[in-house]
Image (cartoon, rainbow, N blue to C red; front, top):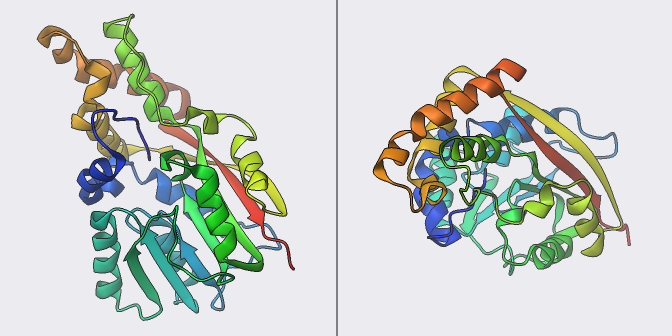
Length: 277
C-alpha cells in the first residue's frame, strides 16, 4: 500500500513502515495477490519448476502468497527491495521456515543486479507508483525474464485509504489540499497495461482483483490513517482541527462499511508476456 508523504523520501518512509507493513495495510496487498495467484490465466504457470522474481517486494508479500499456494518451494525465488528493513523482514521468514531456494537482497528495481533471461515469472505487487522511473523499472524486469516469461504487475484501482482520508479532510476543512497517492494516473483504466506494452512486453492483459477488509484488519488501516504517515493531510491545521481527525476517519470508515460490509479495495492486475524469441 502506497501513500504520498512529501516530507520524507520513499526509502525512509518504507524503512519506518517495514515493521508494521502487514497490519497497517490491512493485509490488503497480500489478499489481492494471493487471490489472483489462485486463479491465474490458463497460460500462466506457477508450480514447483517456476523461477520467480518478487520485485520491489516489500516484506516479501508475493513470495509468502506464492508459498501459501504451492505448499513447497519452487525451483527459485529471488526477493528484492530497495529498503533494508523490508528485506530483513522476509529474511527472518526465510530463516524461520528454513526455505532453501529463496533468497532476499537489497536491490534497486531501476538497476537490477540480475542476469538477462533468468525468470519464468516476475511479480511486482502494488509498487510501480513508488518508482522514480516506472518505465525503466519495467524494462529492467523485461530484460531479466526468460523469453515467454510473464510479469504480473498489480497497482491500485480503488485506493480506498486515499478516499477515506480525503473525506475526513473535507469534513473538517473543506479547503484542505487533498491527500493523494504518488503517480495517481495509475488508478486509471489501462494506464499500467499500456506502460507495460511501452516497456517492450509482447502482450499485456488487464484484470481486476477485489478484497474487502473487515474486523481486526480495519483497525490496522485505521492506525495507518490516524498515524504519523498521514500528517501531511493535516498540514497547517490548528490543534482543535487535528483533534477532530480520529472521529472524522471513523465516520468515513463507517460510511464505507455501510456500503460494502468492510473497506473495499480494488487493484488492476496486468499480466504481461515477453516475446518467445
